[in-house]
Length: 290
Image (tube, rainbow, N blue to C red; front, side):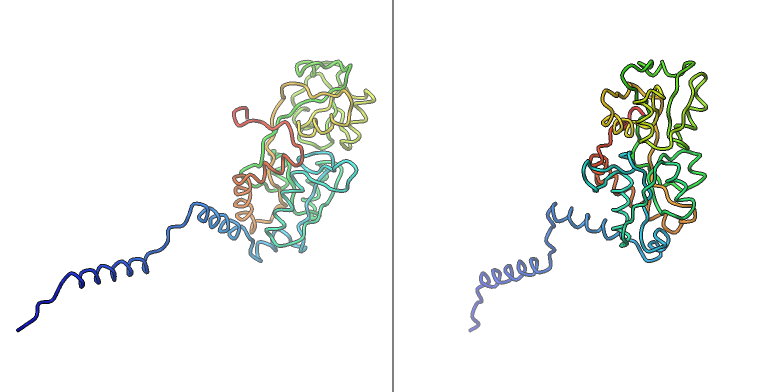
């Protein structure tokens, strides 16, 4: 006589086998923290430069960063220390790190010399106003890093109390020699006289000596300069804005796409904002007011 088979133990066994197979074949769902960390790692690895890009952007084997002292957009020194910071310095060093080459600071007196250093092959990179005139001399990356207001610095007793008081007969306004401010105001003024200064240090001395009634440039420089001049103040309002962007010599086309990707990334992840804060950069233009 054929014995009947109990189906319940077999059904239980089959269910257990199915569950074990599902566990073995399934992929664990990553946690949000793990996903974020992976994406961050992917971004860093994607930002690292190839040998061809490294050769294009740092042909001497080091990334030579052109900067001029006294401007938080470029280079500033901590009081009583050789430590330097600034937008050009900090962003340049980060790019050198990603390129896998040493960073070398090429320090100059004014922005005109910085641009010329790129033109003459003495430097590889800087941050400066991306004006049309400068775009004819060097190549700029897009998007710009920051936008900053342009204004005036005056001393106590200056005949200038407000921006509307500037363009009058007898008023002398200092500007950095060869700067975009000099070019712009030369076209805008009808009565005031421009006085080009060879350096920001000299501009400060001229303000104290009353050789000029005001000094005009971006507010990042003006606030920095005002800190060293008792009683100096930056006038309310602005006469324009400028967009600061990464500049490289002409002919570095092989590195352009890489630079664009890196600049976009360091803006989005907050590196640019942190560099501005470390440098004490003030006078930034809000997105609504540009």
